[in-house]
Image (cartoon, rainbow, N blue to C red; front, side, top):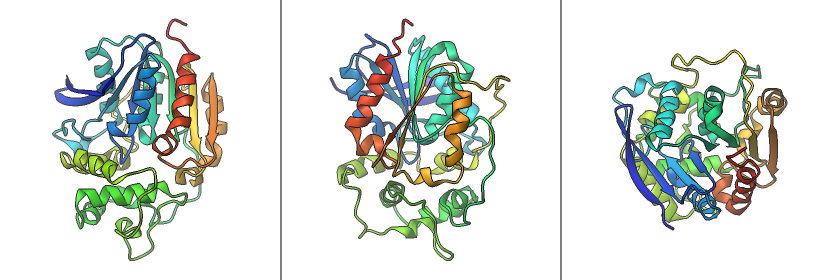
Length: 313
């Protein structure tokens, strides 16, 4: 089996998907985060396909080989939900599992909340479900999210380098166990240079593929979703009951820098109140990119989860 590629016309955009396998046991849709792309799921796609499932990994609008929307400054989560619903309908998928990573987990949770009859279950890598706001101490001004939310700042920072160098630096920083925080007078791209080695599980070939996939659209939309449009729901009618009714598996790498975010210490407790059927698994050495770093462990967890919730139940 080989991964195949095609484009779907959804919401007046040509959205790219990668797919492999037959849907003998069901369909699993993989939703990437940043700085990722469909390619982030290559290991998981092959594994679930060999287990009897159809695996689909789209590039979100504005990412990878998908079209850039004409008005990226007006990005909202509603657009991603609408695109995901369009994917279901374009491929005649009545029901599927969603596997989200990083910000890709948020539309997975939201879609399960809005369309529970079309979801068999949700797997989230690194991102708990947090339906209510929680307070925490402010993070330093140099924290990467604070910097990238500032209009124009990341564009100037990234613009000093080519796309490959930007992706390389972000992968290095996000693979560490410490949160990326730039000191005063420095920018995020200054936190690593060409002498800093890539993670041992991430090859130069992988880097070249990521860079090539970011050449088409660059970082215009990724700086909106998830960073600058983080709180823009776009008019989604969220139901009054915020409880997710479908089964959820949360996979957390204990060496993921995001695990050290102050609000993370509260998230699992809140999540247990808002997910009826919740399983949480910790991977001790797992970093932010645990699905690429420790692929066998993650593959086994996903396959066990989807097989324990067959589509006919």
